[in-house]
Length: 196
Image (cartoon, rainbow, N blue to C red; front, side):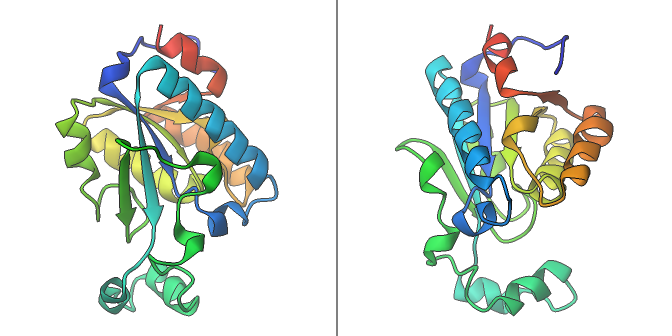
């Protein structure tokens, strides 16, 4: 997808797998295939010595209480009852891409990966300056995190074929028209070349 890729040091790079949770994966018609592609990307990142991080959306009782009604996401979350509860099996990281000991794992209560987590501190604490993003959905967590990560001066990559959206045309539009302004758009096939 991208002919002019920089070469990355694996020790300064994290593949962030975002919102790969059973109830979110099930929203996509090709969810199982997407999980398989994300697992492939994780295996490549691990084999090259890159860090792997996981971001999941889930709410504790206190989090539910703090959600302001004026927030559109809050209205949706509250309308689902306890489907988004942090103890619900549906909010765990999908078994097909499960974390290993030593991986970064954060739980968020907003759309983007940074605003309600200590993700930035964990990445910087490990010397990570490059992030490769894979997530569901492209128009949600990926879009929000691309913008925030770029503003935090990370070198950002979007793994297009390990990200998905319920609206495929929206996914394609973001991948082709919006993300290239702030990120390198890559495919799983580019990972080996990226790590030189």
